[in-house]
Length: 292
Image 1: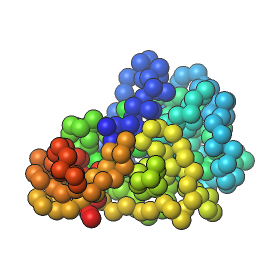
Image 2 (image 1 turned 90 degrees about the vertical axis):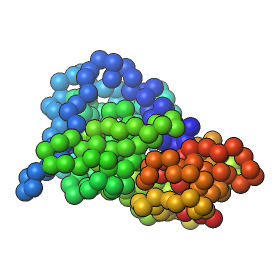
Image 3 (image 1 turned 45 degrees about the vertical axis):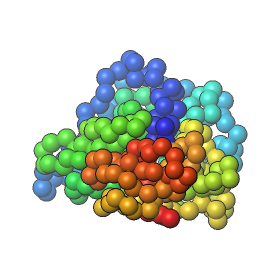
Image 4 (image 1 turned 120 degrees about the vertical axis):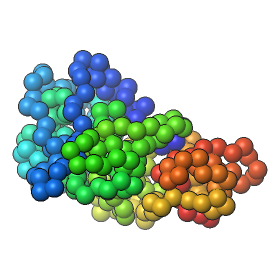
């Protein structure tokens, strides 16, 4: 299981009690030409009792976050990483901004649940939701796949936007609530490489200060790393050909060198033989980097 499956499994435990009580929201629709803002920003009015404050039973890393003001406006949509009460795990999702305070933000999720006192350092503007042609590598959100990487598989005006992604070693397709082009460089909501257990792992930046990046790891926990050791990763939107050298990622082992031995699903999934003549295995496009 690689970083994407690990992230959703970790988040699902914290959100399962919510999902069991409510139905999923309507998916993101591809806009007709000349239309306004994507429907993913039209979030429902809160209707359920307030959720426990994100400040209750805080994990230690919360105290290390920079104290920053928020430039977001009430009613706008934003990515946010919300610590789950009584747990070291977090939820990465798209929310509606309900109130902005002194270094904190109150949010409302897709189901109308309110989350208070989220540090502004963990709340970031969403990216552009329009102009996502088929084949675009995307950062997307649904209730069960928060902060995920995938590839736009269907983008027809007036229809639901669909994204293909990896789920525990199989390729799935889903309608999404929000999607935007993959972020690159060292910035919030960008997937990056960072040192881990003598190797190199991959995770999602959820916050930055002057010297550190706070990274959501494959185990669903937050780690603070010096920005100097965090590296940008460049995914291959065109995919790979047989014989190409790659670095293949799994959350338990990090990146390992190998080569493409078979194209299983063009532009999506590949068979890789790792160095050392180990058994060949299947990898999704977003877990492969050009090698060596």
